[in-house]
Length: 296
Length: 230
Image (cartoon, rainbow over all chains, first blue to last red; front, top):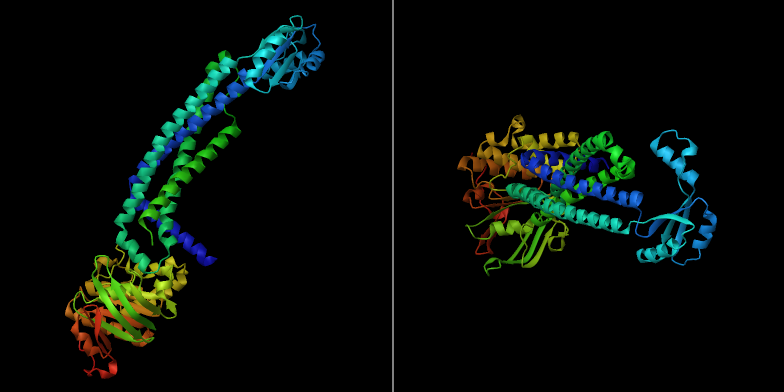
């Protein structure tokens, strides 16, 4: 065990020496990998935001809200709607519950006498194409219905924008990723070539394959780790600045930030994805370079 | 013990480097492999430490059948190698060059210090352990190479033209050192050289010519010249 730990420590030391020998190329590799991860991270954040906008503000293509007139009995309406086979769920939000939610969101004290909110049924159907015929039927109950909220076109457009953004992000990330891969691969390969005689000498001395390859792969892991941590720090800084400015300037026109901005949990998930992607990506290119150039 | 049985080595261009070479070297024996350039000395050495594969035949080092090995590092750890140009790591000191293989094997710093100082003492370079290798003369560099080869106490020592880059005086000093190491440490040693003066060392000499053994002289058959004057 001690012997293994000592060897591991020495592999780390060799990796450090390798980094020192690579000089300014380290900065090039880390910068490009970091840029790739920042673009990738921004795309992930935008994707999360668009998903939240679609979910929180516009609803989905299979969901719509029916606002009832004051004289209408919501429980009777629920019973009536349950007979439709395409309906998968019905959620009733009473006018009192809606009023409470509004007070909570706005964080101000409002008198109940001001409550003019309707009872609302949120109805989910099996497929998007089931929504329109059902809405037409419900609309015909004019004495019961005040208004139906359904924005399928907007949701569809939003989904298209989301997919385009993901495609664009994937394209840019792929280009940057390919550049990083090539540069990292070539750097490790150059180091291997420059040390070819030394490495073959080590092999003839009986140094194990992993002791020779380990430092190069570790070097790749370190590139990935440093790049992703730097990218994460920059992303968090951008996020904090944007959040602050939004809350200060735009929130009054566009509503509460929590409805569409990635939460702390979601940001943490994005950072974990970035770190794992960076490490996996960079170490795999190093692994491949050593596999190709150092077959023993 | 090293055993070569009917070894053939043919390159992809059709050139035959070794033809039907059989050789038995008992444990602890020192053998000089001599012959002109292109006789097959280096090829034979490379077959032993698996830098090249043989086309036909069988090689045993100790009880290990070299042709059946998949992990060569195990074999190479049992062999100390000495090259013509010493092949030292330029960015490391004398001590660190000798210690490198021990570090790669996970030896403790205490064991490393003990073994490296012992090896450097054998080659007479203990006082210069902290120096960088580029500050050493050719003969001293080769001594560091020898210390590196013996530091793990391998049962077999192979030296491929170890004096090829040295002047006659230093060459004889190196041969004398090999003889001392053989007598002290009882390692099985094969030293490839084209230096005819090795006859004076009173050791077994195998001569290669055209890829075949053309002479194999046991020590008892050699004329005695007394100790080598350096």
